Image 1 (cartoon, rainbow, N blue to C red):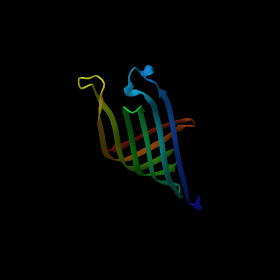
Image 2: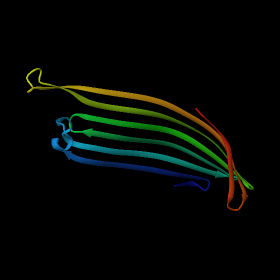
Image 3: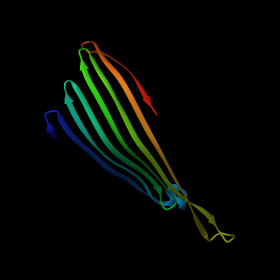
Image 4: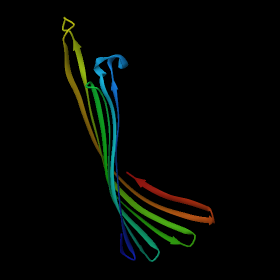
Length: 173
């Protein structure tokens, strides 16, 4: 979308949801613990907005973005795990063409959150009789958060047509 001759905005969004399911019979897996559906599900959602500003040979691109994916695996009623990373970020890239050089500098900041959920059932059979099965659910939840920051400066030098050298420095924490 053109805001003005110098300013443009672009919105990008993407989503997927894929599932693979197989029916597992006890004779296929050798255990009633894993009888039922084997399920693998992969989902992804992403959205980003880029604002491009061009003036006097400078190009500035500001991009806020969010993406989340989830990976779920389960075997029947006895086992399951879900991993869900989520990332929220903001980055700025500034470029200037100067003769045979393209000078670039920028920064980025993003927050990442990782959630892992899992469960399994411990099975105790019999209590002496061999006919009774007791199920005791065992679950786990792990969450972690990280903040990443980065700065960079680079020079893309065109030696001759078709041959470029890119050099630069980057700090990331």
